[in-house]
Image (cartoon, rainbow, N blue to C red):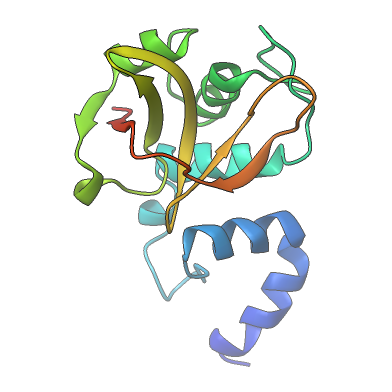
Length: 157
């Protein structure tokens, strides 16, 4: 059996969350021997996978996981699991990231929603104009299309 023939069985073992993450990111499956595993295991990729794995977790203001999250709590938790430290609030996280333009954004970058100079929300860019985020009280962690042009992007280094 060639490595390419094993892809369907790898997908079956990977589970729905991994398949959804791959679909959301528009990524490909990394099969040992076919691609660099180091390239697939970046902190941004890991953080994105962690956020996607929390799909359906309830929003709770001030919560940082592992079962409930607010917006910056989800990004903090996801990057912590990926080996990176972020400050607690969305505004503090914005100040800690390397700012990138919309044309240079990549999956795993943080998306900061702002009104004027005030950052009020953050999510993790999933690709194709979508983010994983914990929206608001009464809602759950979900993948959603970016709904405004009032966003800035930041890369965690």
